[in-house]
Image (tube, rainbow, N blue to C red; front, side, top):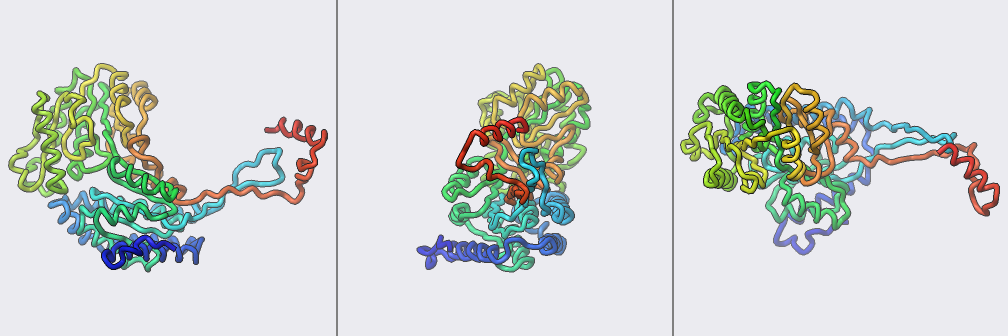
Length: 480
């Protein structure tokens, strides 16, 4: 059994509890390798129930952590989206659990082949601060559906949400089934060092590298959901009003603190002015008085707010045109920043080198579709890509010419909550996928089985070899 914290028990009870909980989960899984369909359904039902019962507490906790989070954003982004994933898993778990027949080559018949989904064991989930409930519970749904025991480490940057999540999970699940472990960076490092059967991390690329390194010591497979600079490409055939509203919504939801938020806009150079005007009108129509509305959220911490203001100041100092769609000076005391457009920034700026994760929107002009594709491909592969337009040929060029974790056409963000689509990154934006059936397979061992027929005589291919063996092999080669 694991003795992670034996030398720390007296000085750090949290690490000792982490070790105890992991051993409890391992023992619980060993006692029930294959939970029944009805048991998995009950576990998913309990999660839905506890979310519904704590709706107001969730809204309050997230808002306390952010300084202010719009109620509707929490309702949709944390509760409705999470229940959507849980409900889909609940409806489909019986189908996902079934063995799957696969074709057997002619030369291997009358034997037959199939795949048996099997729970991995104990799964770890490390959740970030920007959606503290959705990004903890969304991967929990397929992990439970797959029959695993699960441990969750939420972010220390959202303590009210983390404490409430722990309270909810403790209420819904017995020890050894699902547990939440709150703590600081040290506990997070210890968590990622546990010999899980699978570990899912959502967060920054820098931290993701450390998590992957720690997991590698145990040969623990990892799913990394990171981020990056997700482009929104506006084609000359796009309806600018609709495109602008979609981009503003995707960028302003949770004040841009979303891993799939459009990070920058690529627009044909000759319509940049019209794009900026459309974005301004869209923002004003959604937030007619951004200084007083409760629909607009705050930045999560002073450190993140200072980082964002520094990015804008750096861009302005470089000569880029900066347009604030609100009075940022009056919003600063509430740690809010109105959508801020930066026109034609240098790619060397920090603004264009790192994920923004806030309501700053660079507009980068392009001359041709190839130019837009080249610009995207010159950077790391993004977590999301958005394209706006009606021209089928240019849409196909963009889809074929770029690599991104996921794509939404003529809107932003929606592919993330489409549970029939796998969600994940590629390259620097992550590895592995989850959501829906793809998540079930991520948290399962899809065990291949070949069942030989009693009518098959494989003795003919066993030593001692003879000229007859070679004739049989030559005959079989005709069917491969």
